[in-house]
Image (tube, rainbow, N blue to C red):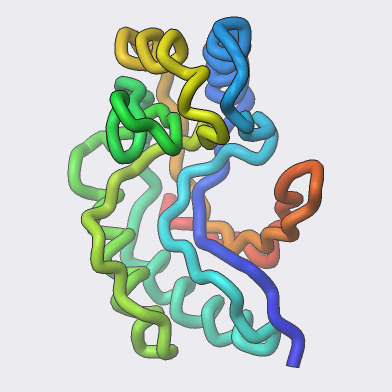
Length: 189
């Protein structure tokens, strides 16, 4: 049985990617210690599935299609930036995302999570925190200036449409993850 590393997500449009690239460039100039995400690979994760059996992709597609049929497309907007677990001890830098009208993203995420538990995937225990990962801290001793800039970030008023759920395959390479869409399912228009 062949295993693949996979997750469900929404992809970003070019305007959002450009805004994130600009912010990331400003952060990079402040020092090292962070492994920065490739801009073309940044996405909004709905559910990380981990290593899955390749033959389970069709079952996942069936379950997620049913979820998509009960949700209309909606708008997402960039908010503030931050770090997990926090700016004083950062491990991951991110830009937050909110949905308009509020509640649609969380509703979709919960339904997708519940649908996938029927296939044996573990239900998510942590609260859903919609974010776009900018980079992962590798050396915390060199990131104080980066954390200060992240904490003062004012997001541009950029919106993007959440129109299709993507099951993304993630191949981990020494140069970073390579993402390949396995399927895309449109939400109602």
